[in-house]
Length: 433
Image (cartoon, rainbow, N blue to C red):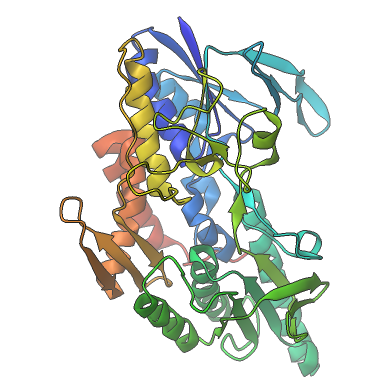
């Protein structure tokens, strides 16, 4: 049997492993391995809900081992140190827990390698950004942000109760007005209100919790129509969030973000959400990469110069031959590429290889529990329709359901939805500690 190794258990990587396990693994036509350093999968577009406390990742994440057992692929937990393309092997770091080595450094041989490494935060060489700003690249970082936010609110509440009004406030500065920055700002505003209602802190969530979004461009959400961007900005301002567009960040210092004009924006917490790039591993493989370290792939998602290596999702650079534009780093791109590769690798003996074509079905951005904005694009007509309000919010929720459907099927997805609904009726809207 051929061995297909998939590195990265994000949205695309797990969907690909699940599909290949059902087609090739179950019929013993190939051995399918999924490699990830984490034991479970969490849908990255929802990391802002972990950072705000709205979502508990321990409840919603999918255990890789359980998914592997149900869909006939193997899960290997470990951090990738290097990839030897000449020997066709992936080297994994020793796996340790509390200083105890569970597994030594080891190598996994492969016949076909699929890289689904995702992306990491791009600080654009801004001085002090990497040292002082938090990021949302994974669940651990999102949980760290949430804990620091709650702790900052509690400390500020104590200062306010003791009459120290200068320290009785919390400042949060989010650098980057894309989807992550906007969604986190909206959810944090609601989280501050919920924490106040449950007496977790003694602050006025509107006056004492000051959230700012700094965007270099003229509009928030630059991938959307300016009309929708303005609508999102108005909604954020209605929540008491400061929206600063046309503002470039020059440097980040402890406790403040400095813009290009020299103005300092005080902050107890700083989050960098201004852009992404591929992990450093991508640039170490001897494959063609672009300026964001993304691996350049052809129309079959094959890495140039190696017929045994494929890459997709945020770590890959695919340019549409028809339009001449690069596919954006979005979950829907990773989903479409995962389905394409699942079909391609399942019928690998077929001489003709079809070309991947990305179809943009639109984009939706959450503005908190009750609102969203976005655009939908017709699959046949290609016409775009602007959506907002409750309808957009419902469609936004359905995006995650579509991801679950690809992993679990209709029955289990329906069961997950029911459990989430019941849980929402029984527990507070945010984590309180």
